[in-house]
Length: 199
Image 1 (tube, rainbow, N blue to C red):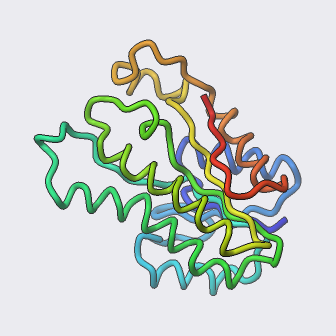
Image 2 (tube, rainbow, N blue to C red; image 1 turned 180 degrees about the vertical axis):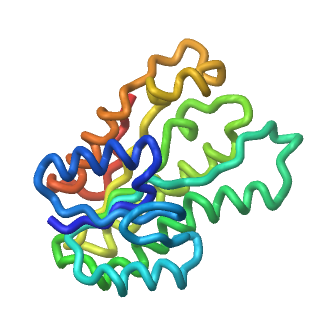
Image 3 (cartoon, helix red, strand yellow; image 1 turned 45 degrees about the vertical axis):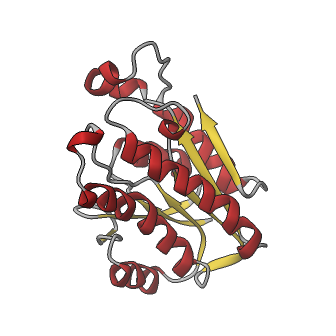
């Protein structure tokens, strides 16, 4: 398959790219500062440029999302809007525009996360946007069929515990490769409208 991978240079995106190329897929990577195509897909015009440049696709996968982590009392209205733009609007736009470029039975795989199910202090914006992504996936699945759409919703990664472990007391982390396998399941499988929990 020819797969567009957004957020390909982060920890998760790197693992997803390796998993997909290891299975023989052609992966076209997109990132702000590195990748086959450099673009900020938070800008709908940049997203349009990416799709015009890459041509026909079998799948789109997103492993990108920029969300602020602060206590609610310290959050501003702009912080919440930034979270929405950084993780929800960007991915919604990938689907909205992408339906015209992805094969009839192709797929979209988005990233959400654990915090709308298991919240943490400073995680209200992340909880909000993760819930929005999950809800969008379920709704979009009934509209874009026979194209498919799913979300991958991982808990904290083992590889991130040194930096974020204090925010997740008592939580058992998962290796990032486990989350990457969920992308493979979404892209190569037949399910749609699903949120694959990685925990």
